[in-house]
Image (cartoon, rainbow, N blue to C red; front, side, top):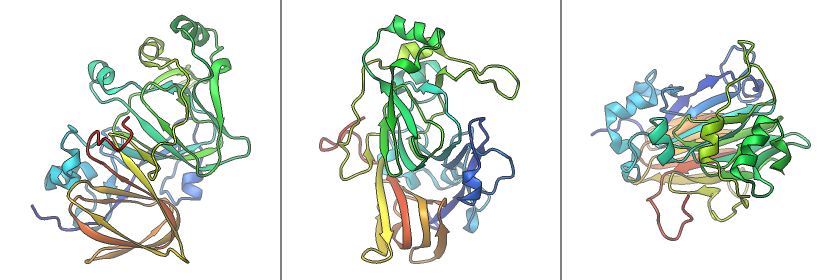
Length: 328
């Protein structure tokens, strides 16, 4: 196997969900002509929204096509336990409130949906004054009370509302009821799944004039109805679990203006630029980047350098269940 290049710049797929805004176009340079851009799927092999390579000899191919051509070795040793590409990374611009929703775990999703479940993390890139999101319940409630509150539009009364500001991180295991509130910009790293069970949607109607579907029975089956404590146990990582490990890169242009990384054969690396600009280089090439850019570095591609002033999230896949890490 020959890896012809080690830095792949990606173009996202776009989603125009009704709650989205246009900050990803205005502030992050996304090339999108519609009025509403809710999500950009920056690192994706999911058929609902694949990302595409824009540089080098693979330009125009999807990331999945590149992997198919090069072989799964480009994902790394730690990805062998996954049937397909393990994660999906996206930007989310919530101009309005998202629906209250929950994601199933792997076992339930594979049995009922034919794809994996969804554990995820949120990194808050920006939040308006008074912004908050929902994260589990204030106190434990019974299954029938949960059902009744959904049916009677009284669910919000028992949900745990968490105020957020720029830089906050929330880890959301499968089974956790959650929702992003309005006026929040988020980077989301998740399992490679598009399974969502909606339980409350503020009575909104879609573009067809009909209320969007709720998935009450499935939500009842998978939701953890016990309050969840925010977990800060991933230090020194931003987030860490069997599905992904996320680290923060901060180059301030002063004490820290250059970072040398190394991509071993254990895992690929995803680099998502949250803010700033600079250059990313290896021994063969150098590319400029700006905020909103997304790069895929295949496993085994070796040394690279990031220079400039920027904040970025670096995502890798670690070995399963290493005892000194918290496991999802």
